Amino acid sequence: MGFNKQSWRSRLYNSSGAPREIFNYRLYICVFVFGILGAVRGLDEGSISGSIAAIRFQERFGLSDPTKSEDAIAELKSNIASMVQMGSIPGSLFAFLIVDRIGRIRSLQLMCVSWIAAVIIQITSKSLGQLYAGRFLEGLPVGASVVIGPTMMSELAPKDIRGLCNCMFAGAVYFGVMLEYFTHYACAVHVPDHSDNQWIIPTSLKIMFGGIILIGSFFCVESPRWLMKQGRVDDAYKALSKVRNLPRDHAYVVSEISDVQDQIDYYQKSIGDATIWNLFKELFSKSVFYRLYIGIGCQLLGQWSGANAITIYMPELVGLVGYRGTRKLLMTAVLGIVKLTSSYCTAFFLIDYLGRKKCLYMGITIQMVTILYFGLFVAIVPNVDQEHYVMTPSESKAGVGALVMLYLSGVGWTMGFNSIQYLINSEMFPIRVRSFGTAIIMCFHFLNQYGNTKAVPSMMISMKHSGTFFFFFGVLAVALVWCWFTIPEIAGRSIESMEELFSLPWYKIGRQGAQLAPDNSGVNRVRFDEDGLIDREAMIESKRDEEFLENATQASSAGGLTHKDTANTSINENASSSDEVDVAIGNDPEKKQ
View 1 (cartoon, rainbow, N blue to C red):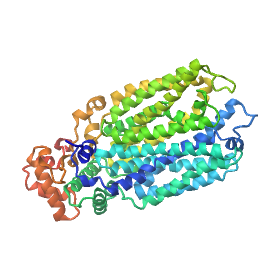
View 2 (view 1 turned 135 degrees about the vertical axis):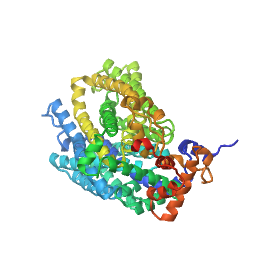
View 3 (view 1 turned 30 degrees about the vertical axis):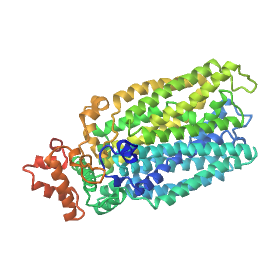
View 4 (view 1 turned 90 degrees about the horizontal axis):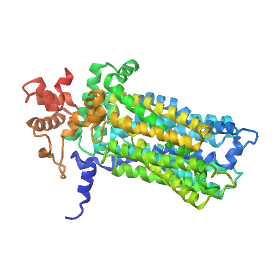
């Protein structure tokens, strides 16, 4: 038997037997545009990392002032680096308002325009105050990007590749980091040390990316789930039909729309209209609050695991293993390549195939080992960064090993926390509070990142570099146990099926949730063979499933653009009780009582 490309792809990304048509160029255009949005964060992290190491930047903004103490320089450095994180806190909260009010695409376009304006303020800075203002204003669209991108990805992507699509966003962070690292290296080599272009050119890359994303947004399809939430059912059918590349009366499209409408109706009846007060009530209901707890816990542990500190202060850390001058920037740039490659390998081959939890376990374990090695190295050889220090041959070899460990820690981070910190937030919340919950979690993300960016320079002075890395190791050890007990496996589930999972007792969700609450959504019951025809043998062996498919499709064709209300009329003719109607369309009768 030869290698069958189609069957390989189906086994890897289409385990639920969905129609092949849903994997199409319209979907991939949206994935590219909203995926490359992740570079917004990466460009800033890579840019500021290289800028604070640039001679002219240090002269311009007081980082090389001989009258300042070591603590004062560290404070100034952390203020400049963390100003974007400070702006990202209100930016992520503001995103919730605009994403639900004007839609995912218009929010993206507004974000791009404000991002470009903030970058222009920075590159024209002649004073520290203007730089602060520009970086704070840049934080607003940066904070919005991590709400807009993952929310759109989770709502638009088929459940089989939802992890892949969201990890395209996470991977783009390191695409931006890598570009900035290499641009700074090129400027350090080819631009005079005392020219402002040494930091202006790398910072200007953000304008180019803002323009690319803005233009690409006009070729995207609005989220059908947002349209359903707004009551625009006709537009939702059109959008879903277009992005799935299927007729609007196709059983798969009808089932997906029906699942979304079910969830909207359920929360409408139990909570009421989507006012701010009712959204807060919904967010703090039992099942939704546990999801909020998971999201905040991931951000807290992930941001204090050391990965963010390594990304931003990598040039300084490379100096601790014996590299000096422009070689520090070159070795720093390699980290960008490692993280980019690892993040996309995780996206394409691991996150949906192995699942969220296994990737997380593997990633945290790799981080723990590498962080511990680096901490031990700088504890045993603490003075390598001093200008006249000469390393012995054994220290030099150990230093190379320590540098490799920094790179491998990036592999662990991209496999673990980075692969789920955007993904799990946007895929586990119900539609009415998806953007609200994601905004609150990302607000905690930036609060912790701000605190981390501010604290690390001082930690490296007071706790020494070794103590700081031992602290990161302790956080990772706690994280490994917490993730095992708390986080459920949700790979391959439809986002409308999460309610059953998170309605379990809290102590069972993380360890037994996937087994106790399988995906019973309508879209999960509709299966197709390789010819695009309904594969009834692969479906649940029940006459009701066949009736569900036939009646839902016929109802959609006969009734135009109706969803489950129309389908119910047809199904009701073949059901002898209201419970049987619920069973036929995929609902749990007991949950409605």
